[in-house]
Each structure stands twice: as C-alpha cells, then as structure tokens.
Image 1 (cartoon, one colour):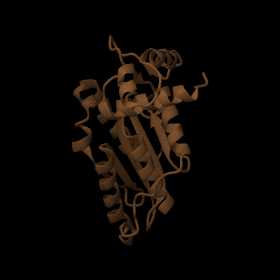
Image 2 (image 1 turned 120 degrees about the vertical axis):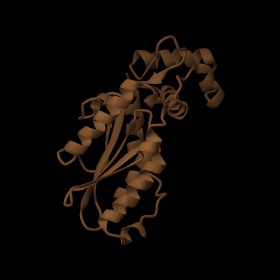
Image 3 (image 1 turned 60 degrees about the vertical axis):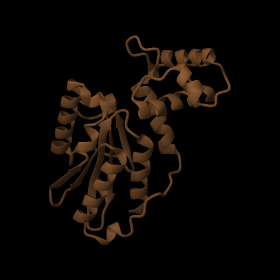
Length: 226
C-alpha cells in the first residue's frame, strides 16, 4: 500500500499523539490538534485505510487507533532520512577518558529519552546503565507481563552485547524486529561509535512508544561528532 501525502500526515500525527498521550487516537483528536482542513468523517475513512494497510489498529472497543510495528517503522524510516539538528555540544565531554565520557553520555541519554540507556566498554568489559527510575514510570509498566519481558530483554542485551551484528550508523529495532527474546513490545536503538580511547556500544531501550525523534537526533549528533 502506497500512502498518499494526506495518509502520511495522518499516520505521523497519530504516532506523535500516541507517543505523547499513551492513549488511542481518534478522529476528533486529530481534527482538534492538526490542520487537515477535512471533516472527521473523512479522517475516519483515511484511518480505516491505514488500519486495512496494517499501519494502525483498533485496540479492544476503543474508538481510537494505536500504531503497529509497521506504522512505527514508516515513522522511524522518515526520521532516519531527515537531516538532524546538532543540538548537543560534546566538546567538553570528550576531554575526559572513555569511561567518564560514557558515564556522562548515558546519563544524558537516559534523562533526555525517559528510557533505559546502556553503554558498554569492550576492552574493560564494563557495562553501564542509567534510567531505570524514569522508564518504569511509563504506563506500559503497569502491565505485569511488560515489566517482566522488558527486564528479560535487558538481561539478553547484557549477555549478548558484544555479539550483535550492527551496521554503520543507527540500528533501530521495533517490536518483533528485535534480535532479542521477550521484546515484542519494546524498541531498541543501538550504535557502535568511537570514543576518545576506544569503540563503545550504546543502546536506548524503552516501550515502542518511545520518543524516537529525540533519541535518534541525540545519537546522530553523537555519532557525527565522533
């Protein structure tokens, strides 16, 4: 299914609203918050086409829609293709050694993303994690299965972190794309990049409803600096 420009905008707005609110998004919400210049009935027709195309789905009896893995993938691919804003200055950070630089980076990553940030120094076999306090406040963690599966996925990263086959740049795994068990409701952004003394491994792990734009922009800024 090739999306029209209108459908692309509706899908993007649904995903952005859902990331912000964690609630299924209906046509009235889109009409109120977006400038479509079309009536809710027309929006509903387009939303049904996006549902039929597998980009969004209707959970239970809700009138709203929630993104699928396919919808998130479309959204993320667009973000990866865009030029990024160099909002971060890493010069002072990289006057430190790799360990201290990594501590600063993952602390900032966790604070910015409200997700779990991981950093790994292969030579020293040191794994650092920041962000548990923030990520567990996300509404997904109210579901017992999600909390358990998230913890299991993080354990898998800790055990297999050196074995991941990553391409250059950012590697974004959404739901079932994750090379991890128990990760169908989780997204992971991974990258290998050069720090002052050695190559390091970075990862951001969170619900699929994570802030992809902020996370991708931060890591792109970091990689471009290196």
